[in-house]
Image (cartoon, rainbow, N blue to C red; front, side, top):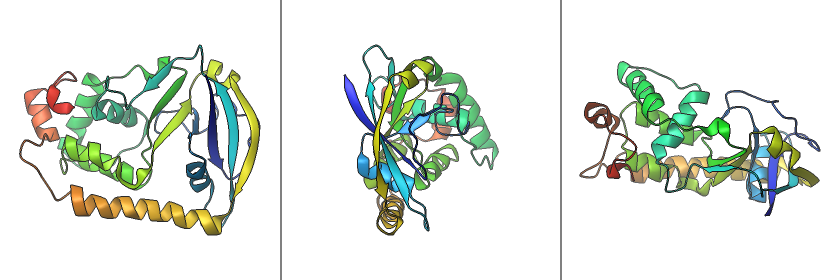
Length: 225
């Protein structure tokens, strides 16, 4: 199957380079894309500079795909991958214990796949994940929070095989005056909805990290779904 994907950047990238980039992105080294053109335009701009939505096609047949949003995984599997790659602000012993437990019990062999799809921990969304490991919100609240603002999912090329399957098709200019304000609005909307409808609204039966640690809850527990 041929998919059209987009990469937001401050430059035109005709040939993405394998094993090039930042190691501390959500899923480690890779080429981070989206299947939504508008989202790539938001990601490509900064406050004072225009950007580009680079356009590609990729033949996915023969490539292995890890979908972290599938029913096979829980939000804690996604968080485990994030904990491996992103720098979290570990401010107390609970957060440190939570990190160690998730890394041990919710491991995902994501490095074995050609492509990964899943949530993007962008700005506010990363802070939601930090709130969870610090015990401020429940599993349910974290899961719902990642859908606020309609940030969507990212499409990440991880292997050399995936990089060989991509073809550059051109680009569209993303004007900062138009797309940066949309980017900011999306983040502010997610943060406002988080405080209005999620963080301060505990429900009976909510599962917090303290309980997960105390009960040594594993991935097959139905309460994580």
